[in-house]
Length: 510
Image: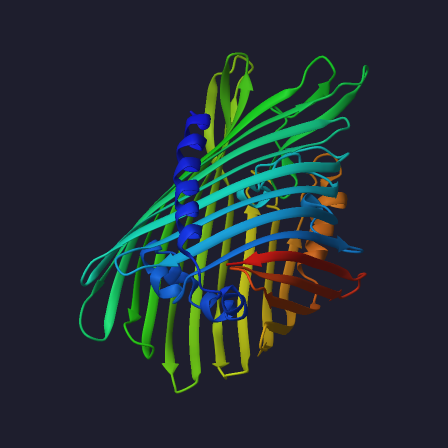
């Protein structure tokens, strides 16, 4: 079934990508890169694939090869490691025509992650808190393929679009214990827009999400005996499922997640007016442990998410100004499945809960000129993250963190006779205004000391991030351009050593 999904979606996106590439002749990729913050401020609008024609106003194609690295010298998220290196290939293209537009994207990444602990799965953020973990950790190697295609049909007052995304990945370790994860991730959306009067247009989309991860943990060295924990949240593990992996017996699991999304949008037909977006997403995740020829459900996780934006944009002679308010709320409720020794289900009890809330304001100004353009952006955001695991006859482990984040961003684009240059600078500061942690003595494998407390110290730390992004495009005499790009970020964390990341890329534009 997964192979058939891959063949079907791959065929669609390759066709769309080739179509877009064949017709895209204008060299606008540099402008798209420079003005991407102007686009991202309305990210809720672009969730609707039928809005893509309003996201980009000219055709472009961008193909790049990049080397990326991230290194944390002090505090970091334990489950994701302190160092990541990757080689990434990315190709995407957009073509606007009179009665339709098409978009295609294909990417590949080969990566490795160092010093991962308390995690043997891929896509940690998708599956948390139900992680199959070990205390040894190590270096993980991975490959990732992703494809995307959008096709739209434009009528007199309406637009209809179909979007398909598919991602396939594999992650593994080369030393005992040897986890291996294979991921298949499919998302399909159908969207439409309709002009309601001479000034405004409304949009509506519906989406479906189907995610599966096949996961196993084995050992090859004779005499190996490594404990594998089935975590249930805040260091608590399931003792009935947690087991010891040896060279004569490993464990196998399946993560299945299915969900849907709905959204509405309002945008001005011209460049001045109000815009709004609202979306609702619901999903259910199940962790299944393979037992013989069957499986037992270990946990399930129900998630709901609401997102809302409201803003206004202004178009002047050579300026675009947008001011945007945003808010989101996400809740997760997890249940434990309990069995007797004969694998008979005894109970399903709701144990885990998590809530995430954020909101804020963003403003951005773009000043376009003949030889240079300038970009200025400011954002302030409040966020609250809370999680709890219920324990009978004991104090519940609980974690709460609240932040205020300030972001300042500025950029300058220079247009020369045969080349162009983008320079961007960003300062991002996070301040923790409240935090609290309650641990439980029931946490196994020294999870409190080596997982819960270090993660909490990282999450509640104040930090300052400084980043630069430079891109230089050179036009050739042929039908393509060449560019190089260098992005660097340096993070100063309270009571910890610094972190850094960089991204160096070379590419072609058509």
